[in-house]
Length: 261
Image 1 (cartoon, rainbow, N blue to C red):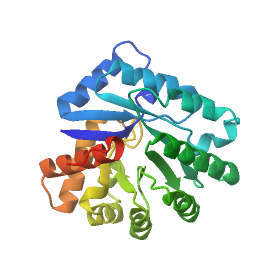
Image 2: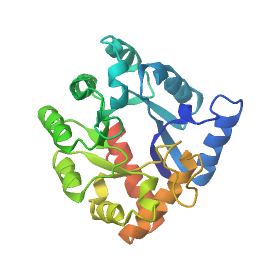
Image 3: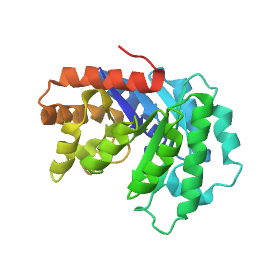
Image 4: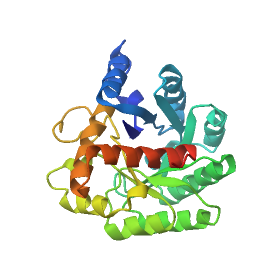
């Protein structure tokens, strides 16, 4: 069994079509996906993400504000996030973080403010953090370091950075998660980074509906396709698929459930 540690079921193009998500979740379970973490990106989708966790036994949820939505979030955003924290299937805060690439005109100070506030919220409630970071290495490290003295538990999701940046995150106690990007033909350097990571610090994800792995590039991504991410990662590491499934699932449970094998 394998885990999709980061997906957006509610953002799938046909998510509101009757029966569509039932088929997506069934396809994932048939493929051997034991759990899917459906990640929130704004106040407006927290309720739908939590509702999906209630609907499907194999789905859990997070609550957070994506950095690209930072400018649209008024100061009252925290009340909406905190209102869901006690839900039994709410396992993390995020995704939050810093993105200086996608929309460089966004207010960086506002991004940093919301990132730090969500880390503080996670620490207060004993939740791990799902971190999005793009072209913001130094500021990301600085904010995590400030929280590090409080033993922050977190993952840098959909990691595409350098080996050096990954090592700095590992030194701060973080996990790194790899998506379908590692299957892309031009991703040799990223596969090298992934294979160089310690086996007890790696998670796998789809980030669906985005970033469909080979051989599904150009199509809508879905949690079942995390098996292709796992196969590619296993090949890069010279490990069996079964070993990778066990290792990454154990890591997922250690991070989000404090379960250590």
